Image 1: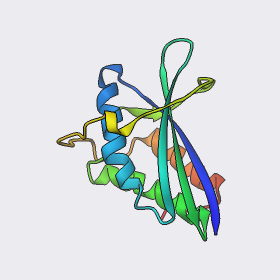
Image 2: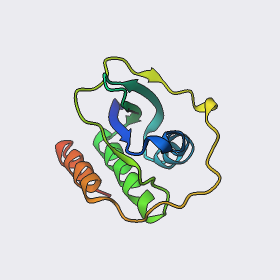
Image 3: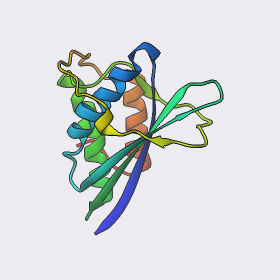
Image 4: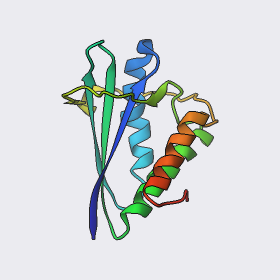
Length: 142
């Protein structure tokens, strides 16, 4: 059995939607992604850079006979969330340098969203990043 941690760095592209972003990530996105084979848990952290921009770090933990397959399934589930209208439209990959310290986000401090009405198309830049990650870990989408 292999154990692995998959780090994902993101930012909310609309500061006025930061709370919605965190509620969506905690109560919609993480439950969707937790269906990946071998998923153990996810923890989220937030850090601020010198300009005050928030960068989020999600650590996805797996125990699996095939970690690459688990990562592939996690990324595929993220892409499928778009088709289901369950993927928020104000997310982007973080740029470097990253904040030096990330503080954990307490999921109990966030109320679930009552309704989701997000786009059903994957932004091309996000698709390219996910596909590059899949290629880097030697996996293909499910």
